[in-house]
Image 1 (cartoon, one colour):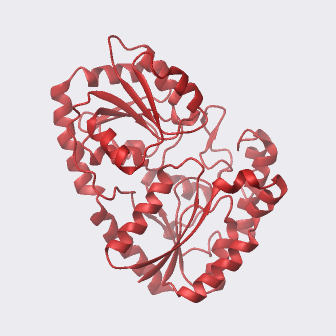
Image 2 (cartoon, one colour):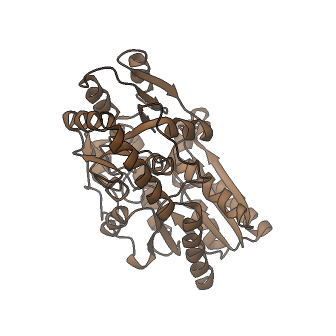
Image 3 (cartoon, helix red, strand yellow):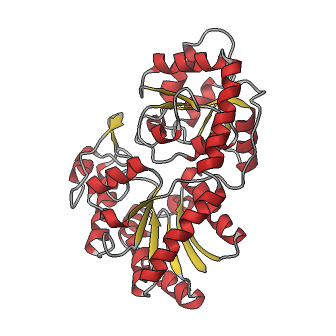
Length: 387
């Protein structure tokens, strides 16, 4: 099987980028021929606002190049990951117009929400679900705190619907959690096309022993990820503790200013090996998200390393963390509760050892590359058969 993978990379490398890379490597490891077409948000600063807006709504270059690539490589199917903002609906239409079946992984809620997070004014928001055009998001300037930018994102959603690439342009939508599937059903996507396949970790980093005895945060340094709540919770802890924060984002400067005091250490963006080593040595991973996570890679990578997770009881995180077995769940935004859970974890080395074994067992049972590959090929086969 020849698979064409299509993705728009983010400026700050995150879970979606890692999932795209892992899936391609996994397919190649099983003998499939993988062709990649990638755009990169790193080139956005060199684009003018008007050009960027038109590109987000309809990218003529991507449409032309993808049609040419499909004719040349003749893939069995096209698998889309992120297409916003530089690929646009034109990428999906290119596959449709060449008669190649398409699969799309929905890593976020971009098909229904201009900012892709269902997030506004510091809390989850569902105001745009089910609307033909997400006008509430435009009114509140939900994307990049700008009505103009949000309007472009909203028009990109509307353009996709107008182009017929909402229900009919994709044969199967892969959704990484049951929670996200329920939300997207509410948004109006067809039930028969929404299939759940969790993310996975590849290659297997192997279990660690937590000998570093530190807590770790891994991911985008931003408000919706709960970084501010984590820093507040950390200031409430008693005694000497160590918190390592890895990642980049809007709050990177704030985190860097705190680094070096109160046991806080900012290490920036790490490569795959650096992430694996950090998690193997950690006592716990802290995932204090305030938004509806879909299936965060950081939590999966922690389970693969056998590292228990302290997480918000919200969204897809509740499907990854079982209280008392693989970690703790706390009310989102509650710094006191988060501090209490972190302290309880770090003061119970024996309990952590038991949880490490259980976390690793859950990974081996549900989130390995092999389990994911079987599910992925099952979806591909069904789609190619229909095509």
